[in-house]
Image (cartoon, rainbow, N blue to C red; front, top):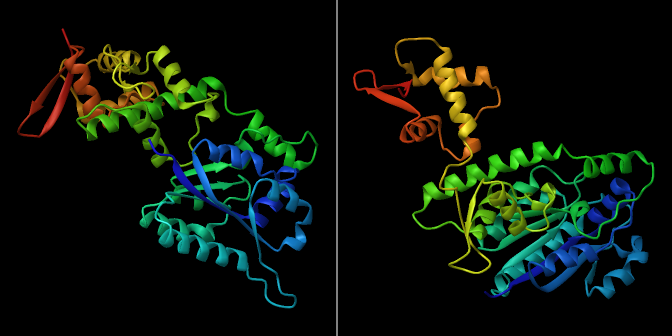
Length: 342
């Protein structure tokens, strides 16, 4: 498989000032360079700023082969960020002139770049964003194919100072939600995504397809947020916990991923279904339309989508196929009723 050819554009003021004010540290380009080296071959590296304000950073950028584009700020004029305009013009020009460039990386958190992202994607270019959590607009990450938060990159060390900003960042990075909760949310996300892929295609689903689908749902998705070094390690963990099944026999390094033959881990949910029907204490079958609400009264966190089902009807049909419940359809009312299998 041919490596992606990457063009990198850095809104340097946005990242450098953000790193200083939000993280209490000096911006370092190396973690970004390392992250992109894992994704392809960087053929263009440009950073835009009025470099009179960033003299100390010049040597670091020269050592990393970044071309510095000088954008002087005129005194006495209304300050319009000319760097943004120049950066957008250069990116569009390159997209038309260099067909071999497949990926554009925009290092900025400014939502003003959203139109540029949309236009590049219209031109069939993959767009990766890089920004800081505190200074990145909520509008920008969903517009990108993938979005990397600078403080989450390998090699970015947060200062151990007691500034208010550092405390907030350290608390957000070092004290995430409990691992059990994180893994539970991960299980639901994987099950929903895998179930959707299986419904939309007759072909086998491979882990590379699963990762691409996850990024399309959430461009900020990263396996490192769940404590895994790679997506392969994440899927192996899921397989060990019987949430998915891997078959590497057909293609090395990109195994087929599917649900285990003995189910999707929905045994407890099926048990809840049975106990809910029994608790209604009716001699007649229970209407499907009210059953989900009753199940949520017993367990407020119940959702069939956690197990990869597209809807509650599909979930109950799966239970019926396993002989756990029986379903009846009333043609006159057009409604299903459900009872526990005898």
